[in-house]
Length: 238
Image 1 (cartoon, rainbow, N blue to C red):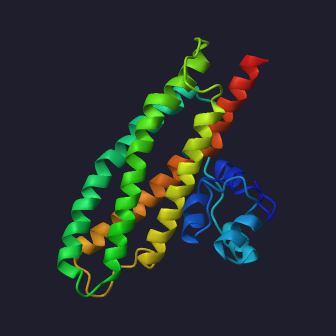
Image 2 (image 1 turned 180 degrees about the vertical axis):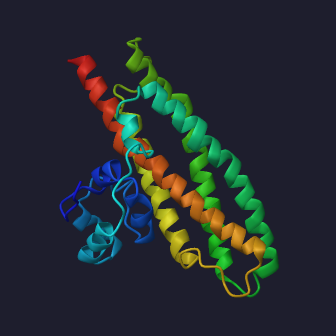
């Protein structure tokens, strides 16, 4: 595709996976804000839209057969929810404790000279406390409901429509996205200070990888899973 300022960033990433990392480097939200045009997303991020568009034009064209979120438009919703659980949920359950241990070590060694680490610690704790119950709600409530819906089974839940838990999940995604943006700003885009040790570097590299994984995770849910589940329910009930 040839993007322009009116292209929705969610559609851009779907057709052009290479754009993900570039948009992240520019602070342009493609997951929670995937419904925005590139122009609108750049305005929200405080980035010059024409400059970002020029950067996109300089990226390599998508390679045939390269992994793309587009594959999940063709998969079953059961397959997509299984992927989210086994890949992104499992990643967070492993990575969050590892990063917490690294952060505590860095705080002990460098906290006196880097008072910003106190805010980093608070942000990370808030992120962890928001994410863990969020994963449980998806695994125990939303995902099973979607699988039942797709299989044609009668759905039993305390809500009338799949849109109810989706609204809750997307609101929580917004909170996570805001915390990630603050963490990125507080760490100066994960720039390790000159006196940073190997553990400091491992921590900030871990934060960067976590941010990228969460952006893709939220993108798959907000831009693919939720719209498909909503459309499926509407079709079933017609």
